[in-house]
Length: 264
Image (cartoon, rainbow, N blue to C red; front, side, top):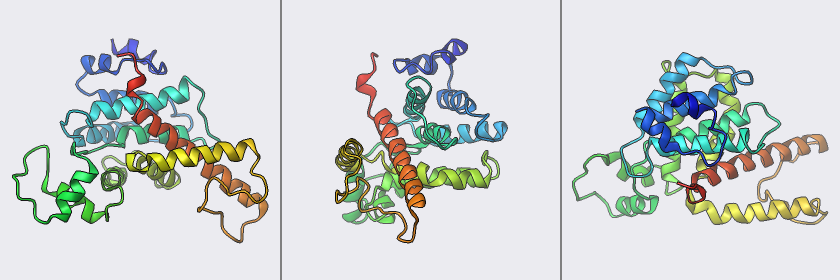
């Protein structure tokens, strides 16, 4: 049954519950198959990749929605965008990066909103008993990250800790360095508090592209700007990479909230 599933992973309407019924490790299965599809573009150790995926899957908590099956589903969704819908990038590692981001984007999620955690932190010591799957550390996340996407920052921190652990570091340091910025941006971009800002920026990008960013118009990426000393060629490279990172962020966000479009 799993072998049959591999042939259907690029179909957006694929039923992720088929995988969950066939294996107790759906995230490890989806992650290995989808990332291995890019093995000719990105060099990695397959044995350590399996260890990494097992560690990620184990780090997801048993909560109703933001669990390991959700991580597998989102990773499979962005893989479908790439393999089934033609989403591509100029940098060879970007498709690999978006699938990786899908796998880890909610790792160790406590099943509570950032707003709840923020209010719990601001109100002082947590007075109610903290029972599994909650942890006392959850109540400090907003304080730790200054109310700035506390959950998403936690997901990023856990991911990069695993990527540097000797047992699970399946990528070379140079590969991690290249992927770090788009991977961080993609995961942080899944914060629903940023949804309106993201949609506004997307509308600005479309407007800029339609009007070829006419002289005097505000660039879609404002206030971000290329280095002041950059040449015209360097500015063009900066803008292309920044745009691709934004597209990567957009499509991960789309897969994350895209469940209502699925037929099951």
